[in-house]
Length: 424
Picture 1 (spheres, rainbow, N blue to C red):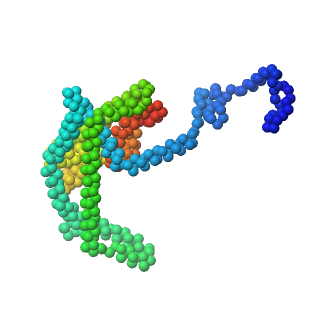
Picture 2: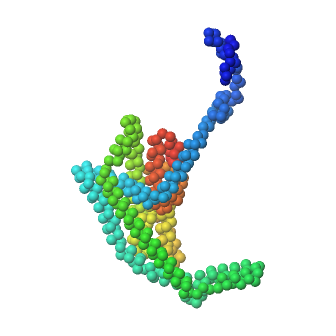
Picture 3: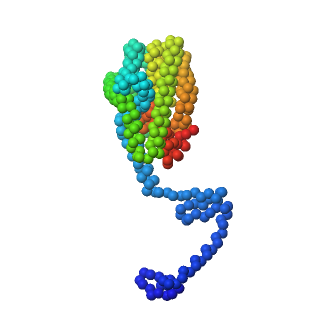
C-alpha cells in the first residue's frame, strides 16, 4: 500500500496502481444458530428456528394500498351500475345455457340466425303459454284480495264485542307508560297521558289511504322496471346466440401471439362454459321438480289456486336460502286466510318447507357439489356479499359468478389463494 495525496471527498489511503492485489482477508467463522436455521438479511427476512424455515416479509405498502383502494372503488362501481350489470350477467348466463341447443340445430344444417330465432321464440312461447294456462288462478288471487283484506280487518277488530288485538296492544303500552310516569313530575305525567289518548279515526284512515296509494305506485314503477329489464335480457340473449363463438375467438386473439396463453384462454373459456351450462341445467331441473311436487302436495291438501302457488314456488326457489323461507311464509299465510285454522297452516307450511328442503338441501346441494366442487362456507359468504351488493339479484347471480371466479383462479398464475379458498 502507498500513501497518495488526498483529494476533497476521498479517503486518505488508496492502493497504488501498480501494487499487487492484497489477498482478501478470511471472513471470520460465524457461529451456527441453534436449530440449524440460516441467518437471513436484516430487515428482509425473519428467521424461524423450526426446521430451518425462513419466512419472507416483503410488504409493498404502496401496492397494498393501491390494491385496497382499487377493490373498494370496484365494489362501489358494481353497486352504482347494478341496473347495467344485472341484465348483462343474466343475459350472458342464459345465452351460455341455450347455446348448445343452437349448435345442435346447426349440426342439422339449420342456419344460426334461424336457430337463435327459433330457440328464443320457443322460450318466450313456453313462458307465455305457462302464464296463459295459469292466468285464471292468478286472477282469482287478485279477485280475492278484497276478501282477504276483510278477513284481516275482522281478525284485527274482533267484531264479537271484545277489544281488538291492536286495542289490547295500545292499552298495554299505555299502562307501561303510566307506570313509568309515576316517578316523573306532574307536567311530564300530563304530557304522557296526553300522548296516550286515542287518535280520531278519520285522519288515520286518510293516512292509511295515502300509504296504500304510495305502495301501489311503487309497485307499478317496480313492475315497469322489471318488464324493461326483462325485454333487454331477451334481446341480449338473442344477439349473443346469434354471434356464437365470435367473442371467444376475439378473446383468444387478444391474449397475444403466445401459443401457451392461447391454450390457457381456451381452457378457461371451455371450463366456464361447462360450469355455467351445468349449473343452469341444475337450476332448471330442481325448480321444475319443486314446482311439480308443490303443485301435487297443495292440490292434495285442497289449497285453492295450487298451480299459481306452485309456479311461484318454482320461481322463488331460484334464490338460494331466502327462496324456501319465502315459499313457506306465503303458503302458510294463504292457508290461514282460507281455512282460518292453525292446524291447516302447519300442514301447508310444513309441506312446502319439506319439499323445499328435500329439493334444495338434498338434490340441489348434491348436484351443485358435483358440478362446482366448491367450499360451502365460501359459497355462503359470497352469497352474503352479493346479496348485500345487489339484493335479490345478487343472491340469484352470486353462485355462477363465484363459479366463474374459481375457474379463472385455477388457471391464472397468482390467483392460487382464491382457488384454494373456494375449492373443496
